[in-house]
Image (cartoon, rainbow, N blue to C red; front, side, top):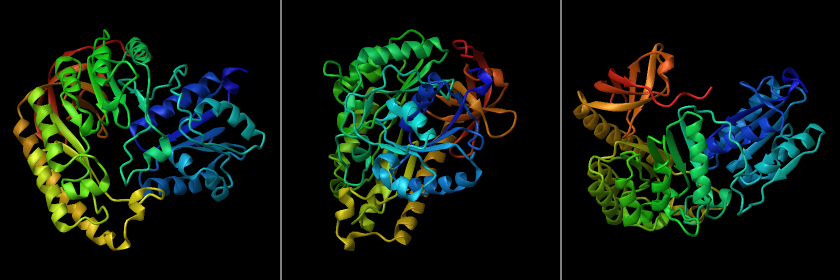
Length: 446
């Protein structure tokens, strides 16, 4: 088969960074199996929607997108739904969308090329069994980002928070071998990237049976060419003294932690089964900031959880002010079928009107604090990694070590390099900057 006649595959990704990483694995597998990547679904031979199930809105977006594609795709195209929504709904998707041929969960990507070939002959299939040994170590990911690399080190979750569908869609927690993560990191550096992001549902609970997360941070941070090391998302309960020491002592580890809080009320946290109190969360924050002064923190917060009172919500607002988050991802509670939260008394349900009003107040509180802190940083000089073109023409988007976004002038060939910038302005959440000194990083991969 010549290059011009190779079939094409298009992958559209929804949800978290783990899904982005899984899409890279799927694309790599399909390319290795004789496919070329398509940049749009309209003329692709295979269309895969890699989905999220964390909130109902995410699933509704996919259902709507499947409807859009039905009238625009090639007549003989194979359409597949992969990821967490596929795992959760399984054969129901095939019944609801007759033009979908494949439904594949996160542990089923090894069989993807075979299932696609069968689908091209008219065989529809579902693959949603868990495989507790599967880490796709022999897959060569086809990375979308040429500046930083997402590296999954752990799959699944054992915490079982009452609102969360992840244990159902990704199964129990299991970790990769440390040596395999280091091997992949060396390959990433050889491809020209210098920032690595370690991924896991509760990433700091990582253990391969011999090594823990502290060992992993030190080993990956010691790989020659790794200039920045990040991880997401940790759980407050798994920041041992050893892990915090490794963060502080490993030069590549960036001065930013995304630390999900979910609520500032101990009462609500108990009902969420988060396994820490308000005071326990604050203690974790203090331990991290004592070891790494100036550490930036972002978080996740849910409002409208069943039974949340106005007093509970006010405790969340006060926690936001006390911690001083640099940013927060904020959500209204979304009931997911099969989670314990859906079995709570109907009388505990918070109306959408109340939840929306609380969300608006929470966003205002977060933005107010972010703007105040960012205004105080104006005039400072920071090292940034230039990541991509900004949405505004002629500008570039860069990132500081503590995860601040800075928009700077510059040429496309600066992407993938480092520069020192002066922070000259802020919109409240994003900075503008002026380059005062540049230095080139590792050569970019072609």
